[in-house]
Amino acid sequence: MNKRIVFVVLFLVFFLNQVSASELLESDHESIQNTILPKGIAKFYLTLDNNQNFEDTFRVVKPSVYWEWLMDADSVSILKESSETIEISFSHFEGQEPGDYGLSMDIVSKNNESVKTSEFFEIKVVSYDQALSTELISSENINPNKENLFRVNIRNNYDLSIDNLSISFLGDYFSSEKNFSIRPYETVELEFPIEFEGTVEEGDSVVSFKIFHDDELVVERENSINIGYFTDVKGIGTPEDSFLYNKESIIRSNNGNTISHENIMKKLSSFEKFFTSTNPSPDEITKEDGFYILMWSFDLQPDETKTVIIETNYRYFVFACIFIILLILFLYYFLKRDISLEKRVVSMKKGDDGFYSMNVILSLKNKTLKNIKNIKVMDRLGGRVEKTFNFGTLEPKTFKTGSGKSTKLVWIIGNLEKKGEVILQYTMRYKPHVIKSVPSAVAKYLRHGRPVYVKSNRAEIFS
Image (cartoon, rainbow, N blue to C red; front, side, top):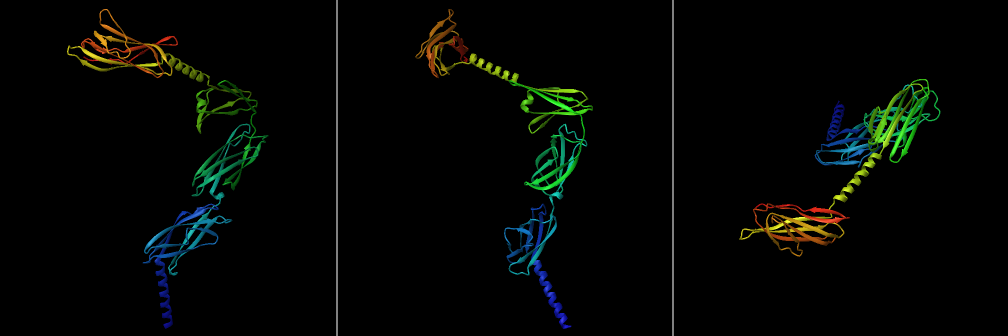
């Protein structure tokens, strides 16, 4: 009886020590990506709680020899009564079959191996066949004489993002390829405009899809399509090209004995479309990748012929541009001024006798890179001017009307050098109540035998 009591006491002490040790270290994990493809990487966040009253280092025991364990270090140090979260990844080993896997991981204290805990990670490995579903959509009865549009819907059945995918759509009479990527639970629709090549036999034909990931074949599936017997439709295109002009006549003739539904498609850039006219007008216009797609759809009765004319003409536009350029050059040539003339009143004062004296400066500039000869500058002084004087280096000729109500000053400049400037000045004595404003001065010169006049600004004077 005493031995039993001793055994029970020892067992309880051992059990309580184990429970106490397990409470000193606690763990939990959160999935980042636990559904993966072959060769994929499963990722988890592992959180460790050190409930001890001292800092400790814990060793993470590798869970399985069949998985590659990806972690920066095999151990982690945690301060007393603190937590630490680390990221742990597991790589799917070569040749491992898809399925559900569970990995158990032990975390043990380096100071006391009785302080430990464990975590169980669930990982689902799916094949590309499981992840990707395909559906072929096509006409029930396919006309091999026309371009046929096949659609392939590819669905991602899992919470996976797959990039760098390509698909080959193969048949006995055609082949086509496309690149794509697919997001979690997304359905991607791929369109394949197919033209059959060679001699096509009527009946069922097998087509296949081959999906590659990083150039590795991961999915291969087959479907059946039905190729029917259709009318014999002949198509003729007659292009006409000349200078800045293009015309294309597309002729479709039904030489069979049943109705044929025809589609004609023309791809144009935005620039081409602006200068293109058609007869008849297209039934549908769509925009794709910066281009306009013009589509004609019509039924051809037996022995019927229809023509679509597409005409692109740049001539009117180019001729209009040339005309505008020539017009601008013409106007520039005839309207441009080689010289500039500026008039400024620099001072004005009243004398003791009640008369005003006003100093005026005319600035004549040559704006060209050539000399201009025989320039005549005339300034008309309105009102009764008593006299003009203080002319500087160039003195003008003075002309007065018989009534004395108008005075005209004329300078003759024999040669004005390229980019040169001449300053003309004068002072006039006048009665203020007579002159209200100073009129513009005028310069005259010859260009290619044609007289050209340049007016200065007008200065207003208020008495």
